[in-house]
Length: 308
Image (tube, rainbow, N blue to C red; front, side):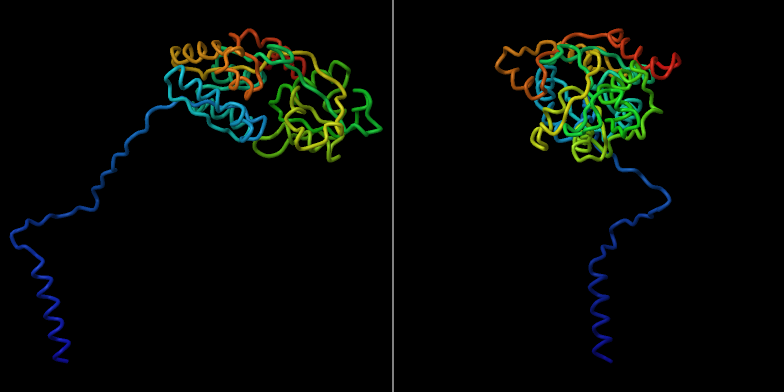
């Protein structure tokens, strides 16, 4: 008992020794709180490739281009990756995407809803500054040989906002008197990114009778399927190509700097060639909003005059 008491006395003496009677005391009011300041990151310009392919492919195609733009403009441009076409649209509306590389169907929606402005478009090896959609089926499908044979069939498209993978083929079907109601089913490629590839794989696996993709997609999936397993049933008309656009309100000087850098890309320049080859383009030309009126006409043909 005495030993415990002595130990207690010793502890108290140690505690008292640690207190300086000359040190002022402070009253703490826990009701008053101060939010610590956080150092803000330097402002960056966000660049997004519409997720028609997987994020990995989107990165592989454009990360050299983004690095080139950073170098040429001096701007802190970084690539971000929306998961879906709808997500891309929403992020533009929220001001989270400054620069977009999209199909023309998404572009006219961004322009109508959020004031996006086209300033350049790509030139491809096949088609130049235009591109088109393709309707595909299994090569060994004995029941499909023409567009008329697509009636009553199961159709998988890329996305409701896809140009080559939905809008352009739908317009072609309408030109032949075939409407949405004539199909047994219209499905859209599931999940984030990789939508074009998934259409081809779904048709190849026999899950759907026909699929619609943009021209060039079959070249992307040559390592995943036997290309002889797929037959191109029909191709759509040509439409203006993929477009670079800026969100509404973005500083015009930023847009001008990026546009100048893009237009300077030259396939004959050994430093530029790898950039263009990775992006699977041969160059970039100037563009304006009116270049996409043909796409607006296609939308009106399908959905009526009230559409943008």
